[in-house]
Image 1: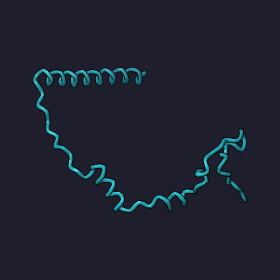
Image 2: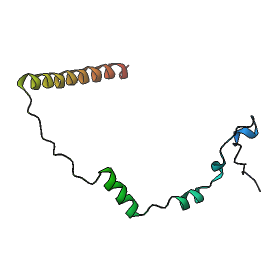
Image 3: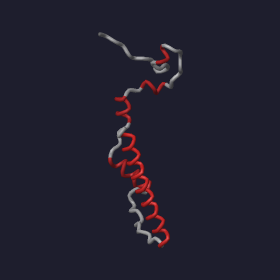
Image 4: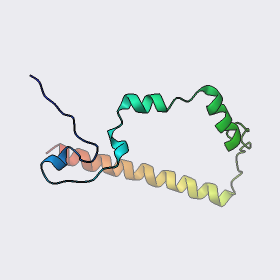
Length: 98
């Protein structure tokens, strides 16, 4: 079976059926052409990383000491989530058992 799926740069595949939609000329570039044009070597990537500051070490992050009331709030949230999981599991088992 010989099938020609090529289309001009100024039209899309759908436009053959519906109507003409203008597409820029660059749309005709193939993946091979794009691969040839986009050759980055490691020196280019290292230069970009240096200029963007990606190679500088990050600031150290230390653990924050919580106040007692903050710890109580977080333990309350943990307890709430645990109770909700138990209720959701019980509800699921009630519905699934029928």
